[in-house]
Image (cartoon, rainbow, N blue to C red; front, side, top):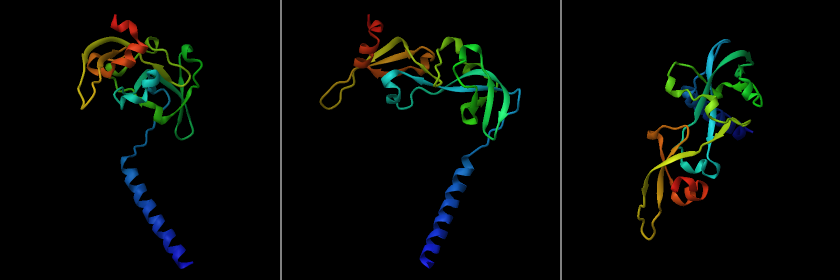
Length: 171
C-alpha cells in the first residue's frame, strides 16, 4: 500500500508539472455580446488536403456579430441566411476577434462553405514548372496559384496529380 501511495504522489506531481507548462501557453479568450469575430473554416483540396504539409493555412470568414454567450466557451453568432445549414453556436477556438486588418477578410460569397465549415480550393493558374532530379528518378512539379490565395502563397504540387484533377490548366 505504501508503494501505491508513493506512485500516486509521483504521478500527481508529474501531472501538475505538465499542467503548469501548458498553462503558460494557454490564453483564455472571452468575447462580449455585440463583438465582431471571424469564423475559422478549413481549406480542402480533395485528396491532397493533408498532403501539403501545412502549406495552405486556415482561413477566417466573416466578420459575424456575437448574439449570445452560451456557457463558458460557446458563443452564438448571427449568420447570414446563406449559411442556414450551419449551426450558429461555436466554440471559442473557432473564433478570432476582428482587429481591423482587411487583408484577412475573405467574403463568404466568394467561397462555398459547406455544413462542416470547409470549402474546396481550386487552382487558378500554373506559375512555374520544375523537375528536380533525385538519385534515380525525376519528379515533375508545378507551382499553382489557388482561388482564394495570393500569388505569394502559391504552392508546389505534383504535376501528375494536377494533370489528372485539373487538365484545363495545362492546355
